[in-house]
Image 1 (tube, rainbow, N blue to C red):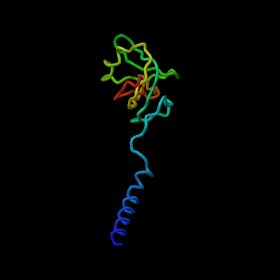
Image 2: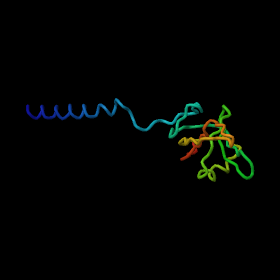
Image 3: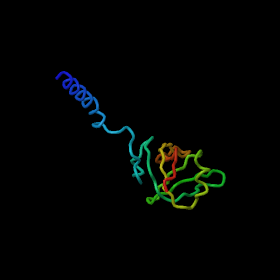
Image 4: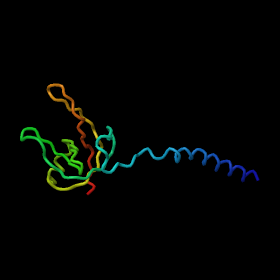
Length: 123
């Protein structure tokens, strides 16, 4: 009888301590697929589909992924070489967002530049 009581007590303790893990969910968020460009925050992992393009001048250019809403998601310079061969092709990328402020010389502020880092080619 004491053995059954001990086993039941252990099972109850395990169930009670494991319950919060299920209640709060996983710490890793699923990446948002084709997220609203204005709602993305620094550090969010996103999945974005669109065309990879080269923008800017010959002196200062950037590789971007332009989504179906004509919003540009900049590719981090450290990832540029891998994706440069895919220029003018459709692709789906997964990456972590880094926000960079944009400001003209006269002080006019623009929406933050969304830069994708830690990029993985999804499709």
